[in-house]
Length: 347
Image 1 (cartoon, rainbow, N blue to C red):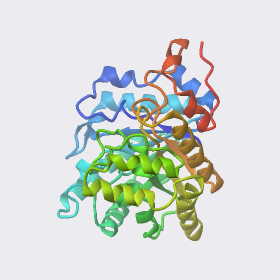
Image 2: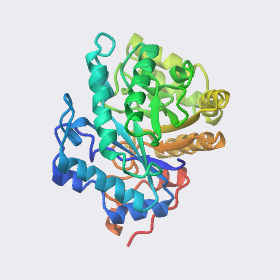
Image 3: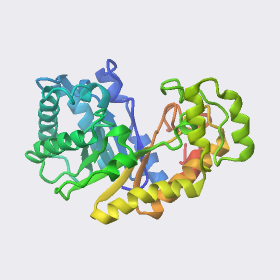
Image 4: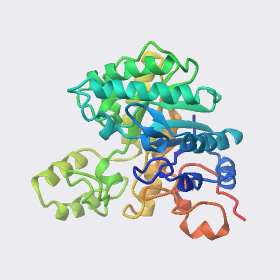
């Protein structure tokens, strides 16, 4: 699963799931370029509306499902694995701590989806149960997820299933869990540490985490001192103190990732990191390069597969489709180099 990328937007935006926009998600030319760059896997996030007329009861939309199958098949032809990620962890999981009904709905939905896609070669398709599930009780979510695994297994016995812990798919919550008995599972975590660096300037970040600007990586005494002028509340003081307590550098990233690598080794469990990245416009180019390079180096040192966030968009490496010389101005070559990919040959 090494060297992958997230491809949101095509099947992820609620209320924007027209057949035409789904078909324009990518092209065979773009996928060939991705293969030439060295990309081995893509993570395709989707919402129920992308393939279903109804979530509960689960009723699939034949035409939309065909669009998704066509996309998966396009990647398969180029030897690229697809992680199919149900990317709706806040909306779908919101009531799971107080009601069994949303659990039953999730299980029923995945049974129908897995049944519909089980004929696709399991070497090129994996099922990811739920992105960043917002169930605050980590043990409860682990139990819920186990029941969904059983539902998928009842119809798709050979496909790999990707699972994750609660608390935003955190390293620490995953380390607190024991793996499931099913051996055909990959355990994923997301890595956006330190968050006020990776998400500085992000207008969707909460608790003043996105309010910051000009944070550098690796940290320096001078930069930390300059950031103090941005502390305008007790909460921002707390965030700053946590960030400044230890240096953030390649060694610190390695230390964090080693924790989950040790967990995987202890339990003989396969681990991947299928989200990591930084906001593009508000993180300076050198810091962005350093952070991505050091994160990839640590992941690969411990044999952990990865999928960066994202192919195109606000955290991505470009804004259009990489298909022609005309797209050159939108490509962040800096990140392609940091990830160790080959620069694409464009006509």
